[in-house]
Length: 599
Image 1: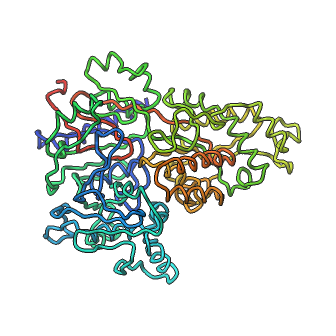
Image 2 (image 1 turned 90 degrees about the horizontal axis):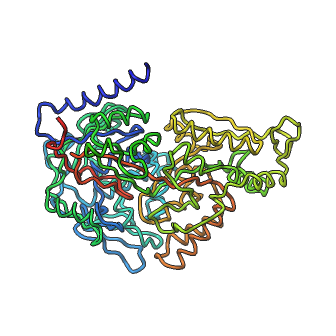
Image 3 (image 1 turned 180 degrees about the horizontal axis):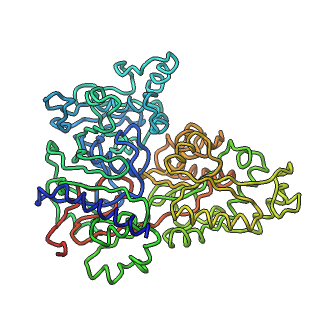
């Protein structure tokens, strides 16, 4: 009965959401649900996938990924052309297109506010400002923009506000529309960072200073949408930005991409965005989220819950009952993985001595990823071989490594060899000093997490290792993980660019407190990371990636469990949907044909 009331409540929420635009019957509205709540609308303060889906629809970076191109292709967005760079990849110059304006807002006091190069200078500096506690800073810091880290450190050392007005050599507006970035070391793929509207979209200083600590509720950008309604962690409405410049559908699919070519032909020249409103409900549990879709209250099922995938798309095809209603199915191999990290500073599972390494490798060998994929993910995944993600450099679909091995006898032999024995005869292994060996894992209360935990406990029971699970909300676990307070936690990762370097950041010591949740610190790995960062793509860089794989498996700060397969579904009135590969903005490229709705 309780579940029935919960489902009814969700459907009522979605129905109420639809009624918001009832006075404008001609409006095209896209409705769907997030499984995790947003954390912020401020690009400098977000790191989670769902917030990073919201921000690029409001804010814009200089460049974007072509919506239909596979392999992916970067194109100008607010820039006039692709960036110019020096031969050594240390100076990058971007020309911003004149005549692009921020959405109207009281912060501009009735004036039209044009986007200029200085807006990007300011936005980069906001990430460096320690007062903003930006989770993006560690990524930006390693780009080594000349003078940016020093400006941050000076403010911290003197305990003074960050000096936004101080010019620095590496980040300058040469004139109203020319942005120049100078970098200490070669960064051949720097344009990928400049294509990240989710994190590096332009924020106007006028808006930040006008709203102060209320900025989160007032995101103002140059993008195709603006925030119209926000009930935190519950319901969001974004509507067409009436000040958005004229932009047309110009996607360029590969010649042999029949589906992409058909979409390009259908929409070529259409003004963007094609929908007027996007309504998003936060529905954390799989069942009410799925029921909202099948009832027609949601137009799109983004990431169909794993327990419903085999029902919705058996054997990869839309179920007959749904196909008869015109429902579309999209099965996608994601540039994503799920892994378990070991906190390298934890007294039980951390450390670099042979006995600690042996413990982590034994635990990894005792983890049955294939069973987890079936039990928790309904078969929607393949065992991961390394830290590299599909569609990124460094990933090889033919790889076979120890990372995917399930070998309990070998795991037990390792534990025995290094003194993890049952010393008191209670049936459980102890640490070599005689104290109980207990793995303390953090988790969440949702069904998928519970199933992951069930597999983990059974696997460790086989090895004779006790487990203890602490349950908290996902945002709380994320905060604790970054602070180094969680011994072990299973977490997902998703590539936001074609370069495999991002996967290595999880092992890079300068990313401790950011992406490096394992708090892994190995000079040999840092050296590989730094060399790979500066090299252009080619055999020498590929060799470094292979060395990184070996070090990752040898020390095992992460056990990569699976590369995810995801399923999206849409009703027939949603036209033009294609899941992006790395980027997260797509609403402007889809259309709603209300004539296809069932009466």
